[in-house]
Length: 236
Image 1: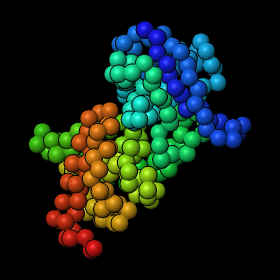
Image 2 (image 1 turned 90 degrees about the horizontal axis):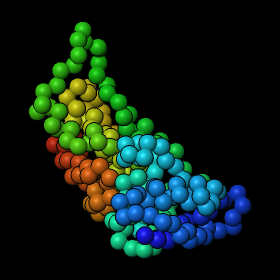
Image 3 (image 1 turned 135 degrees about the horizontal axis):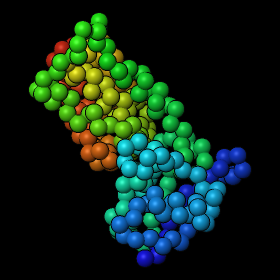
């Protein structure tokens, strides 16, 4: 089948403003949007810029906006786009470096802010044991691949660049409810601020777009309840 990819193009070094270019591509319904982009780059226009790596939905590199919804190009099938014209744009809320490539440094700065690693104290002689019940408390948060789809789709992030954002909060959730971590109180206190967990307004867009089907909003609300339970009500 023949489809049209309408692709966002912008090179700040030479272009005065963004524009869109249409590319005609032969694609099978079971092929992915990433396959179509590769076909464009390899066969039609080598100047097209986008990120990709594993191409199997593990690394999160090829996150972009496809037909108005943030997604991974390596997971989005042509047949699921339900149109002969597929609109491909960069992740919103981020500065465009070139075409579909955005500057993710501010995103990873916020991830690093929550210390996405364990504070586990003195190493034991053997492994640190964790029961199935303890592991269950972390839920699906361990599936996060830091693709930034949730952050890009978040209406709050779009209006407030200081908001920590969904993905960093998921990373914090993972450690707060990890029985091996020793800094639970400190982590909760770090998030108990206006631009931390309380900035989330429950739009649920983060949950809708997560390619790993993580219940992001649920986990953010769980952090809020844990803060109220352990630190007390947050001042209005």
